[in-house]
Length: 496
Image (tube, rainbow, N blue to C red; front, side, top):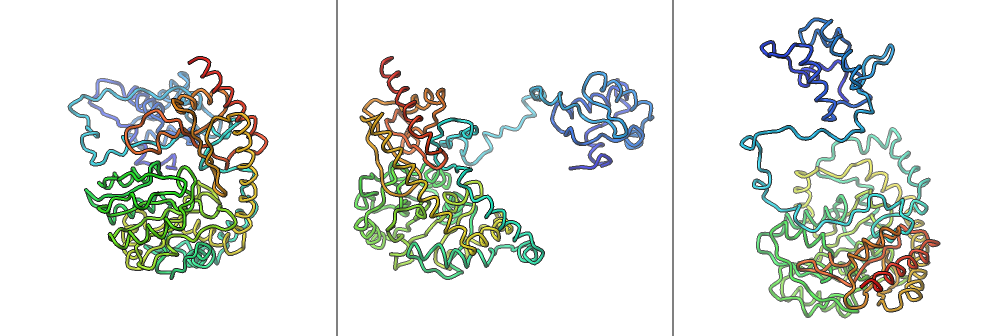
């Protein structure tokens, strides 16, 4: 925060003109009011003393005293004994001041200048107040009751020890924490059947950052990416931002139909462990067929292994573990186990490609925060992550079972895709069901669900599908939440 005596700050906020028709006192008051209403001054930051501000502005001290006194009388400032003048916090509870009336000829047309249409692509569902909802069937969030608070604090305290700070505080430029790379290499990847060298692993700020870097590095305008349909909408948007065209490929009970992938594709994006959003795993014959066709047609495969750590007791080997040609790029994430807000993931790829990704990442953000990397490395090395995965898997299995039973009892005409592992259930309602409208109606009863339309390629239209997350809702709230949802469905059917 700037100092109360920061000359550059106050000269920038309070500009005095001796040629103005307004008095010096009025100019000072006008400038301070504008700074307050534009939220440029925090209530915790004291204004300079009248003497110091007068010296900085080149005016008489009495002029500033009178200006401050009038601002106190008007309620913009408050005077605190022996501490000075501060912004009145009550002023900041009012709506922000309307934008200044800038002539049209002087405005910048940002819409015309942009080169990508990121704001026009489908947005992610936003539930800022999901923790206050009684029945949050929200996907991708966490349950505070399951978060390993004590263990995470321990690792952060260890990372803040003097010797540890020396390990991570320096600028790594394009490198990652070697302890984290070691832990990913030794603890996470072998369980997926992947054995990689350190130079074949790079840390990212989550799976989306990984996809964005890969799209930026490898795709050109006109590249063609085969994707599951329904599929991960943010991946579809990232590829389109890179200028690529997405090719929808149908999904059934065995996952993505490998034989339906157009031969002219350049890339294939797939979620084989748990398909997004139906949760169906890609069968072993489909995996082998996909790899064979990829070699035959020279495809590069992006394997998003986002939910693999919460799989069933006998998870299938990752595509990367079956790949013998180096064309599968494996993307992993800690979001579904440790915390979605941590934003830490990784890419496993041939060393030559990882070197290029490191060079690209350096121009974007150099490297993910090294203190977080060290804390996660310690979390893994101490066995906390293994214990957490066991605890989460047991808790989510109970919740999934309760949710399945409740749906069968209270919504018997809905088709449920229920497979072991993962953090959600995919539902399909009777023909003509509008889950977007259902979501709006259910929200008024405290039930948060995710409509399914955004997962399908093409213009958004009415969809009878929806996804119910289990990671953020307490077990005892599952059945009451489904009862409320069923009641909303009954009422909407009666009104139709």
